[in-house]
Image 1 (tube, helix red, strand yellow):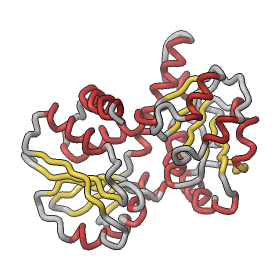
Image 2 (cartoon, one colour; image 1 turned 30 degrees about the vertical axis):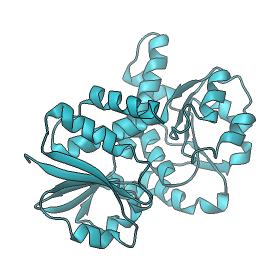
Image 3 (cartoon, rainbow, N blue to C red; image 1 turned 180 degrees about the vertical axis):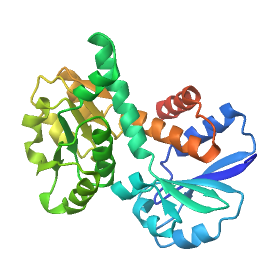
Length: 289
């Protein structure tokens, strides 16, 4: 496609950094006729919005609350997206609307950056060292991002993570996702996390911004594992700062954002994403926040 329109949809959407990332990619790839915007769309308005799209549209990025609502409106969905029951990417072509999930890709890539960094310090990265480093894993939160995290951890070799949930009564949806993914998590209450988190090799916090601040204040160190906090405002989060002070390694949440967007660019344009250009644009945008 010589030109194309794309957008990120959600409600609210003004905070999204997706336009920064995708526009930087288009500029670096010389796709001068491509455009990317942010559009505020509610669940109720989504069907009509999709029906109004013409053949100039190449793709859509989806954020909450649309990742699940869009599924029944698509012509086909990848098995991974069905497994986690979340679509964050729609590719549009003559054959219809095709849904996929690049959040899992973003999480895996971000975690591999951190785990490879640990391996560098311990004698050089390889596939076996990355997989072994992820054997003992924990997930904070039990929402949509936690579902993608279970799939990412499975890919890294951990099929029995511990999930710390604010309410065990609200884990049934995630339990269904785990069953589809053939992952066997153990659910415990988040109140117990401060004392037991240091025992895990990999920790992914999927909690909303500031929701882990209390946990950070009560963190019992020292720690050695790798923490990825998907929140990136403020930078660093209270949890990431506390983890570093206690001796642990961290991966910034924007790394997941960067890598999931890069995969979206590949799917929508058919071109390999210019990761360095996107990374530079993201860093510049975050520096102004």
